[in-house]
Length: 63
Image (cartoon, rainbow, N blue to C red):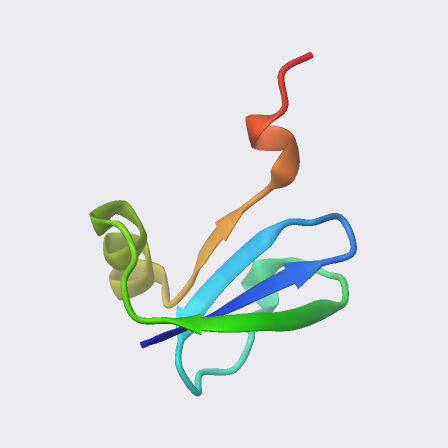
């Protein structure tokens, strides 16, 4: 299982259930949104190697 967090800039952070929020997740105020059991292989690999997965909202905005 995984915990999903959002910050005030709507960045996404996913960690293993019960794990602390890493400093590498970036500064800001993280709010826990929900627990999820399934994530993509990309996210699983990132969590295995780094301990977390983070996506910035601006990475997906087209400008």
